Amino acid sequence: MVKALEAARKAARRAQEATYEGICSVIEYRTVRDEQTKLSHEAEVIVHEARPCRLSFEKLDAAIQTETATAVSQGIKLFMSPEIRVNSGSKIVVTQNGVTGEYTASGKPAVYPTHQEIILKLFEGWA
Image (tube, rainbow, N blue to C red; front, side, top):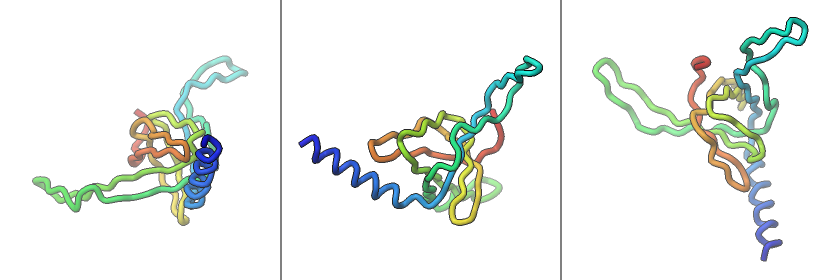
């Protein structure tokens, strides 16, 4: 029974990974120490690079009416390998279908045996 479950999960993971059309890099803003000067400063650090992934877009509402304008709301979800650790607030640069975008992980990923799903929003700068 256990071997059948493992085989099913491997097949499901292969099917999931076959849908990955993009690549992404995960970047964190960390304190970095310069070994020559021994001084510390804040800098972007790439923690994962060129990882296979897939972006998915969905409309959350057709339109949201405000006093000044109508805004369209869109959900952005990233699918990737479950072994890759992505911290909330990380900057994620995704290239898919020839288009590159910068996003931020808006919360903790939903991790499954075959993949993980991360809700993204457009990157507007480091908090």
